[in-house]
Image 1 (cartoon, rainbow, N blue to C red):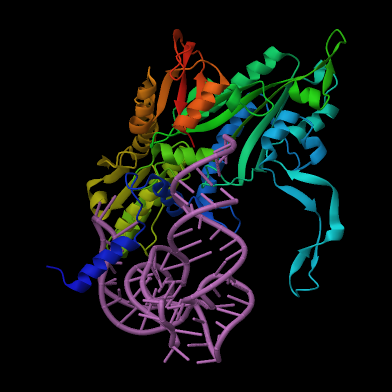
Image 2: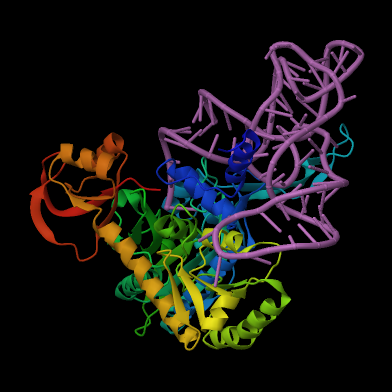
Length: 508
RNA sequence: CGGGAGGUAGUUCAGGCCGGUAGAAUGCCUGGUUUGGGACCAGGAGGUCGCAGGUUCGAAUCCUGUCCUCCCGACCA
């Protein structure tokens, strides 16, 4: 029997610890809890903008570095273009401009001054109005194509394969940490080619790079596909995408690669002479992924105890927690860890943290590193040293096992690989079991409401039907999968003839 | 941008109707005991109650405005 104060204490202790809302209870809150309490990001004083905290940024750096290498390996180089785009340039490609017009931040003045009526306060100086407004880039096609015009004269200048790592601003009505914020970080590749075929090949190649990255680094299975005309990037001829599925059954567009045709070349007058000295407009692509991937990563793998990060991009892959009584034991553990384990793991390029902070006890550390999604934890106590073993816990399954200290680094290395594969397989099994073929409207709605996930259904190919379905179900066509099977059928809404199934889902 | 909820110590929250010296737990600091799943004892520091006005002798509390966040909708990566 507990006394009242003891009850009180128990209650407070549990409510005060970094408790995470369960997915079942409130999926959105679970996600927010993970991002905030997992130390990935924080809110800021600026509406719609977040602070990416060191742990979250370390994750982004790992992702960025892996992607950057893949871009370089496919022949691209990095450059940097301005944050501001003069309005006249921005509006040059009409469809692109229209598509983004509703969410642009605009700079109209270049100076503040002291408010004469309100000492100590500043006001916009009406004398300092810009002659031409500057658009804060929501994407950089305009400024880049304006620049490319001066860089491209002949086929010898092509292909031009440039990427930039940057921030962009899209003024969103409703924001969500990482998934949708007013400002976000991304990379945008912008390439120019002599032929349409070459540009299409580039578009598809970069889609493959994204899919490769998502699956093999982030361990998030994705479906490669093409967007419908309605969902296409403003100004593109074709938009290819990778679509991932979150644990609540909603889809997430994880990356896009656009074949821009000659739209931007014509809008910015970018021509080249071919070998026969004939002038033609160049063919273009653009492709991007953003910090949104972090949100997708969190929602694809994590559980009610916290983040689950794939080893290949986890900022800390292994954490070692010493368990000791007194300085003698601590010294023995230190010796083993610092002189053997850490050097061996570091030699294998594994990032390892030894948490011998005496402020927190082991149990607290276990919970903390589980919250942060560190893939592997090694607990090492005096008892283990006597038996020449260590307790190894994996985050993905929460299984614990005792392994001999002989050959432990090799064991950890293979365990990290195993975890990487396991979380991918787990996410894939979930994804695959949530692609449902339906043949009637009732079934369509029922699957969306009850089972969730992707719904594979026939569609008559018209924008009107697509709109109508969106209106009725809040589901959009996520993509027409690449190499889609062609089969005759009837549109799930209109009954009109269809040649293939497309993937619908409610999406982030 | 519309509807709802919220903002008080680092964190989670109480207090608010009914105005009168700012509270709890946890965390933090010091010392000690501890350490195999979120330790314990003793002492201590910490808040212009989101911000700006107003009402009042007096405002965390009442009124007005404004900013930020969450949820639901319309918009979007």
